Image 1 (tube, rainbow, N blue to C red):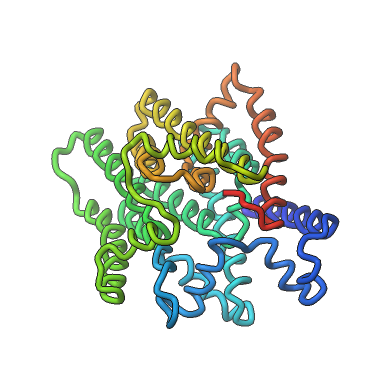
Image 2: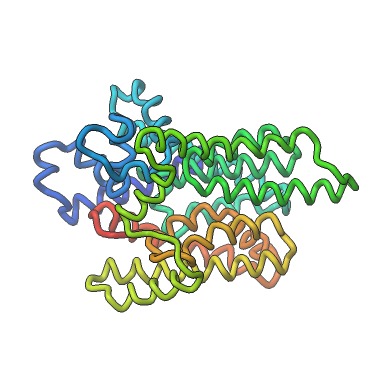
Amino acid sequence: MAAAWVGSRLALAAAVLLSSWLLGFDPALRGQDAGRWVLERFAWWDTWHYVRIAEQGYLPPGLPCCDQAFFPGYPVLMRAVAPLTGGSVLVAGLLVVLAAGAAAAVLLHRLAELRAPGTGWTAVTLLAAAPYGVFLGVVYTEAVFLALALGAWLAAARRHWWMAGLLAAGTAAVRVNGLFLTAALAVVYVGQLRADGRRWPRADALALLAPVVTVAAYVAYLAWRTGSLRAWQQAQATGWAREAAWPWTGLSAGWQAITRARSPDILVSRWADLLAVVGGLVLVAALVRLRRWGEATYVALSTAPLVGSTMLTSAPRYALTWFPVYLLLAELAHRRAGAWLRIALPLAGAPVLVGTSIAFAAHLWVA
């Protein structure tokens, strides 16, 4: 499974590089530094925040904002792997993402097989062909977060709660969404207690405090450096004008962003933002109907900050980590009435995946 995933990512990377060369992306850089040109097909936008944090830490001289909006887990991994890449944290970031994506594929396969035997390959195929899966192969956090989240969920399903708590703490070190995963794991824990006929939690419930401590430690570090307990939220507002708002504000902002789009890449991206959030709401409803309370909690809490925000930007990228959708669609695809989905969904997603990957390589706005 890991080899298949790595092969799919390398094939996609080769297609992106060939297309970038044929289409003449960034010819000046290609002529000056071919190696750098190759790397920058898979590095842009948020990438440079992670690279700067890995190289210089937070709040280097002359830069008061806004790297602190990005959690330290991924930059720490980049810094740790950099000695193996000759000191290049950019190359290290790509290697970390490739390894994390392979781990995510293996874990998704195991989780799908545990839930519904025979659906593992289909679930991984859906992940591999996800339209915005470009972010599972570039210097971004989605692959790392997804691998840790799947590991935590699988450990919880097997009742290895200390391991689940440790892996959930890893997600919280990568993104604040790790707290949403932790809340969902708590729902799963309560469900297991009820199934066992227990009224009180065991000692292993304490494992779920690890992600909370992780986030609290980062908030405390930023407060020490900046003097504000709200440094993370302030960086979000200053750098990206993203603030909490009424629940309907995000959807309204998403539609307004579509009407204001002035270029094809922005228009496509804004539609993708809106559709991803609406899809998230539909997914929550489906999971509630199926009484999958833990998964519904995770997706609901992940969707809520988008809906209740002043902007929907990057929603399709965030949605890559909503792993219940791969499990649910794989199960539907293995029912008699849904067998056509096993072919239709990858065939629909793969061309969009290639297109968004080439757009990212051209440094157009994707998500």
